[in-house]
Length: 79
Image (tube, rainbow, N blue to C red; front, top):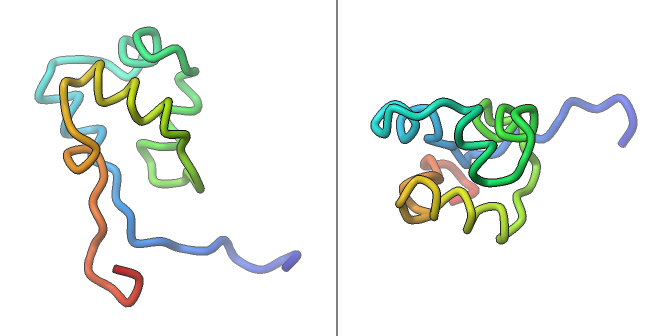
């Protein structure tokens, strides 16, 4: 619906923590994954509405993690 606020979701992205644990910058990850800094920033800040499985796979490979390390669902009616 036009003019309505964006839908909120209870999926949280832990990219900051994973990057810090690996002493890696967003720019370094973007280069390894092949996406723009802007797209990773949107994901990192919780503004992404979707993520391709191929992108998720590439991020997990670059960070040597599982999808559950990167994403979590906070308790709410949605989870």
